[in-house]
Image 1 (cartoon, helix red, strand yellow):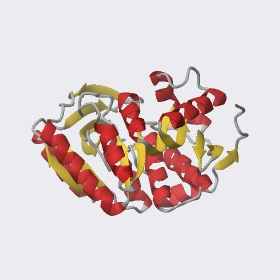
Image 2 (spheres, one colour):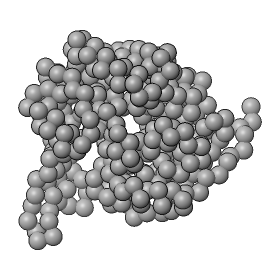
Image 3 (tube, rainbow, N blue to C red):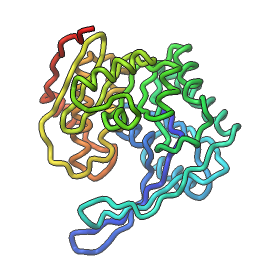
Image 4 (cartoon, rainbow, N blue to C red):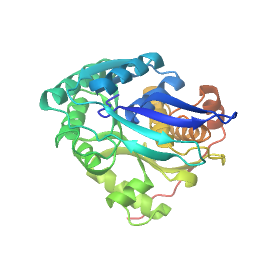
Length: 306
């Protein structure tokens, strides 16, 4: 798990007795994906830079989670944010800016990621919370190029400039949301036809398989040479944050198990759906996910006319 921007999450919450509590957790896209992978039964290895007091806290929190950590020492402090969840909505109170990694820190992160990926045969590549200056330009292209040159399967959940770099290096399976495709100019509207056209552009740019999440509309995907769509049962949304990371984890887990395209989508949609029913990002229950996956409808779409 390539996780270049782990963070400490600090959350203020209310209890039923009207008292208030402060919660500290490890977070960041890479950690949330790793946590869902662990929930599904995998043994992820988190490759991440940690620095400063927040980095020391992160190391302790990750250790408590049981997720294996390959720590790279960073000179700047690790990221953090404070959220207020005493009301119905999650409100961000404060967020620390992410410090750019120095050249030798990037080299160390690259090296430990490559070593772990070569051993395991699959690498999930996460982003940097839209902070494009955390990694030097070209890092994602170099990483995925070297991984795939050594027969490592690359699963990526990226957007923006990071996505463009990764596509230039080649990605075996890309998960992206329709909101990100709209924001980055891959599509101009979010109907099914436009999303399929965007997937075709992503494939031309360097993606093998592509899965696009569309919130309540389910997913549209190109997998194993087929156009597919999937949608699960409607669930009451407690917190939508982290659903995409849960889907990415499920896709990577399914790829590692060599599941069929349909089963990949069923597991991914179920993992995302279970996540939104909970307050914890990238969290869920394996049995619930597997059972819900049986209720996810997958249909094959007609070929796109050229």
